[in-house]
Image 1 (cartoon, rainbow, N blue to C red):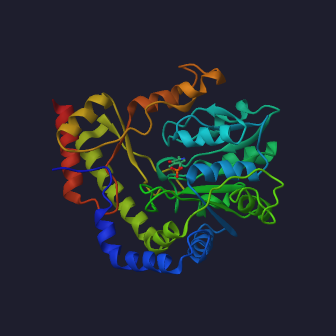
Image 2 (cartoon, rainbow, N blue to C red):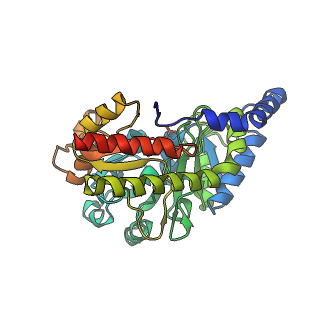
Image 3 (cartoon, helix red, strand yellow):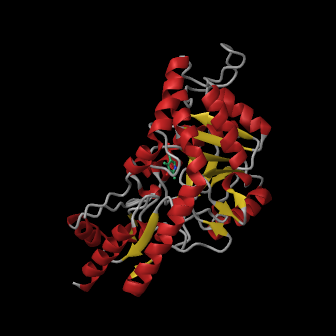
Length: 370
Ligand SMILES: *Cc1c(COP(=O)(O)O)cnc(C)c1O
């Protein structure tokens, strides 16, 4: 068998007719930037997130950068975030002119450990960026309590977590704003780059709208520095076709996750640590990530057997070469460093078949029985 991490072909075939009509409508209209498709998507995603505003932008990295700037975070400010995330979380903080302060993770959820946030707060701390990694929300109740106490901005990086819930609330209902990525591999993926900021804060929303068009307000008058970061009509049209299916896809991801967990626990017991959905969370399983010993050998073996896996992420941000001037060293954030050596993500997408999952688990078992 040959099983990729993600196979989008079946999804495209199911949506093809509708998709081609939607794309043709955009091209026939000759309106390509910030038109009706973007407006519709912004309204639908905001409503879905239970907040007042959605502001489309170029990608999920820009969404974080724009949200930070819109919330008044900039040079001289420190922003606390997790070390165990995709590079864009830290990179966007630096692009906004601020300094990232990396905090260790809860080894069970892979998300920022709220118990370690307070000791990282200084006079310069302005914001916290929790990341809802793999599709499970961070502990937002605790994080927002700390943020309120210290008067901090909270921007949730929900690039992997559209549709995830925490005690019944969406990722956007906590803190100042949340950001989504519609990169093609995300749970709601465009056919290119796209992103969005969602917020209930009118002022932050208006700032985001201005920043994404070069800080222009009124047109050709610039009071703040912005850039060109817009969601285009073609991508919005693609996302409008896909969006009505999102909840069904999340449910299917959860079903696949339950199948993996059942098979792995039954057949491998303690050899594999399966994902834990914390009480009160609705995990949308952007990734199904396990922890194992001999991770790299397992990955090489599975590759030989036709099973693609991915390491998200092999090097935590605090020890990335580009951040060496921040002064961190190996050993500073032991849980993030350990996760980077043990975590491996298995193929996960709504169309994954039970036979494929059985094959993957059988091969993992074969590896550890050798
Ligand atoms: C994908 C991702 C981003 C960046 O999104 P892009 O649309 O690729 O710019 C940011 N943070 C996390 C956690 C991500 O997974």
